[in-house]
Image 1 (cartoon, rainbow, N blue to C red):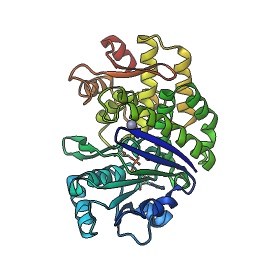
Image 2: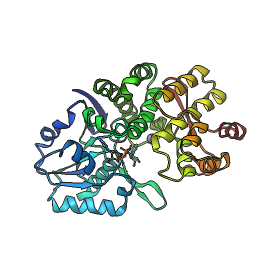
Image 3: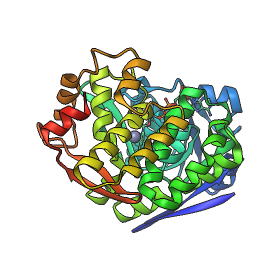
Image 4: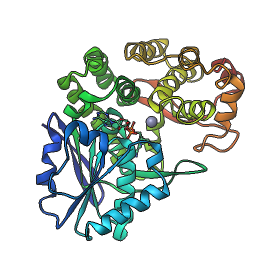
Length: 356
Ligand SMILES: NC(=O)c1ccc[n+]([C@@H]2O[C@H](COP(=O)([O-])OP(=O)(O)OC[C@H]3O[C@@H](n4cnc5c(N)ncnc54)[C@H](O)[C@@H]3O)[C@@H](O)[C@H]2O)c1
Ligand SMILES: [Zn+2]
């Protein structure tokens, strides 16, 4: 088992990565007065409960879980389980369970500890590390939330063996993103392991999850509350959010939208910021090998979204990105492996060209 430390001012925590990591949940919570578990019912059905003796609220994973109503249910569950300020709530599931459990723990009795036990590739490499928690509002995704760093994170790569293909691939989109941000060494490792990752090889998964967590840990430690430099993690995401908005939320899985976002960001970086063509080729090739679309044309075809993803609809989506000022979208682009720039404005002609 490997461990990555996340060091924040006033709070440090460990991320354990490896096959069987979730078995440490018992030891890690032993010192707490009480423990309760918020769990994805599918994960419990496939892998058994996280902690046999702890009260467990089983929920159906998905965006529909991340609502005010869902939050209320988890808070009531904390109360009826008798949790105190010295207790811990464990979140055992993918990113939706982690986001909801994290926010409930941030609010219950003004904040109790949360143990994150992410069970999807996306949640292991991205959502569970970094302390962001949120629910959705009718007006948009992740609009109500808080920063609440976990007491620990257990990335059990054995749990990933039951992910369906679409979920695995969606996670690989974020893996490739993280590797480009991380730099040459991280990207080379992901490239070398890509075929084995697609086959859910446990050793390759453990190795790559650890590398991604290390990259994210470094970035989060430098900017725990996303005031500046942490935004590099949004590489490809301005395009991805516009795709998700234009397609209608839920039509294109997030990691798939990120994949196309990475391909567009690579082309944009080459034409606006002097990124080498070799980096674009490398990005597209990794996406292809992961079974992800590497262009808008591929995506439109694969999801039958010709009309929804028209250049006009995407431009409209870009102008409404929540991260930029309305009308002037800001992009995060990689100039080289590991060299990412933020707040880039792209010329209208270039954008029209890219979205064609
Ligand atoms: N907080 C953050 O920093 C952050 C970062 C990225 C994404 N997110 C959030 O994460 C969410 C997406 O996460 P997700 O993709 O994990 O979604 P999810 O929780 O909906 O899980 C996806 C699917 O996989 C299933 N599943 C989970 N673990 C499984 C396993 N081991 N085997 C088989 N099936 C399993 C679930 O039941 C569900 O059907 C979004 O809501 C997004 O906003 C948060
Ligand atoms: Zn993302």
